[in-house]
Length: 50
Image 1 (cartoon, rainbow, N blue to C red):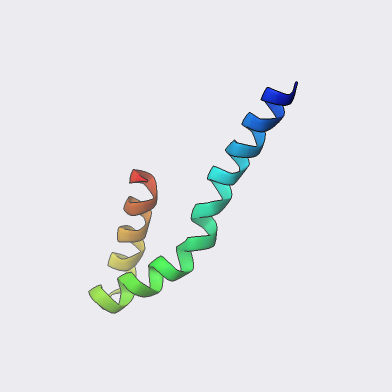
Image 2: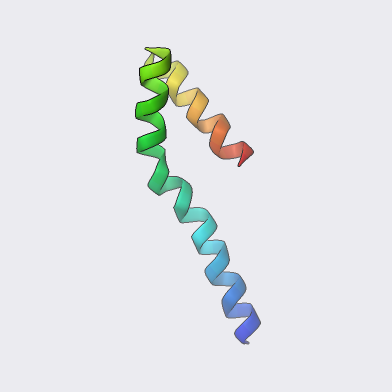
């Protein structure tokens, strides 16, 4: 039971961390690319690769 609870907590952490970092990544990508759509695509690809 404890192992299952630990696995669920790790899964939730993996799901929430990208959401927390997305705004910062987007702002950085936007500064570099100067285009909202390209910045959004870059952030999405980065988070999928992580």
